[in-house]
Length: 517
Image (cartoon, rainbow, N blue to C red):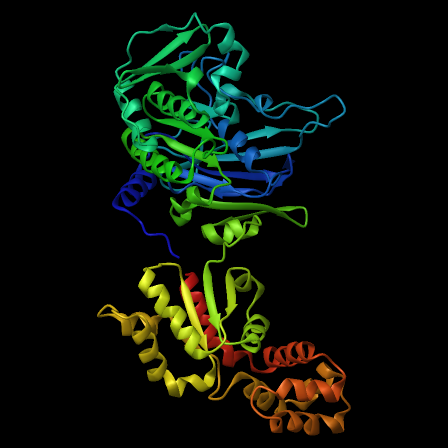
């Protein structure tokens, strides 16, 4: 289903696309070469939070690394406690063994939204300009200090490692001390409490050397990061980091959902959006979570994959379709109810693969059974997209099916008739699908001859046998004359329909597309 935007979403987009004061990263374009499998990458950022999903090894982490290297920073700029520098270089992410060949012959363009362009930034239209990062064959990356300055923070998967399993934290367990209050502690504890459903009475951010430790109080209980769950620890680190950076930061998160259950992920995204609006933070992340994708508008979702050795980036992909491509179970975006196997095979034969991959076709058994299933959905108040596809001969019985569904719903709402109509469609023709398919095949004997391997002079005779066999016996009769299994005969003749009469399936195809947006 199409993403429902909130007022916060609209406010965030309005800010992001019209702000030229924060040097926001708006595009990354690999114009030459390949870096860790990524080639010809061209990705735009049109919303303050952008998430990338894809199978392992598709290039998600490489995109995060490229984003981190878009900016430089001053020595006094923010840096994580464990980092030596306040900025990132390609060597922070792209390391090689002595047997590996380092990336070379590469040019990457970074596009920014800016008020005024420096000499090192090449403008391209109002408010946008780019800088190039290059690495020639056998050479080094061009000067890092020519990059624009901005706080960049990368939080990898190590953030969910419990303090009890970190050797440094264990070594300094007695040495962590309270630091001077920063003024944002209450905001951090309230944000984490909202996400996890807890009421923290206090939160302290303790430090020692280059390490930190959260300590909280809940009622009479005080506990530290040593006794927190992985997700709780990660949330305190993320929010304390954002507030430590103050405003106008690029936050890069690997697997943003780590350590959080589904509900917490949704609440986390709400708080993260609010924080982006409050602080002007831009977030770029990867995810393997359908819930994270469902919390973002179309332009904030990308699916990355390698097709034929080339990088394919799909923007605006639906969460269900994205995670069906990842092999998740029960991720169809639309449920189709049909009466029998003939309807299922006909629909599958005539839909393009891109649509087939996004729907689940369930054989229900009869028109009455379909009406009953729709009524059950209405009673349960389920919002899952569902389309009931009746056989063509049910058009004349539309009122009967509606009345049956209304009766099964017991106490239907006032708009039940409209609700039912919006969720019903029909196969082409005014008869049952077996008869319609065979009747159409009579019009194209040459295609039937090829499809069934029949002699030319037998086509009309065999099809007529099928039509005379009686309702629902058509393909059984035809199969007995052509030496094929019934299901194979059905599939072959449905393919004939696809070749010769695909336009008659167009209304149903368009109806399915309307559900999928």
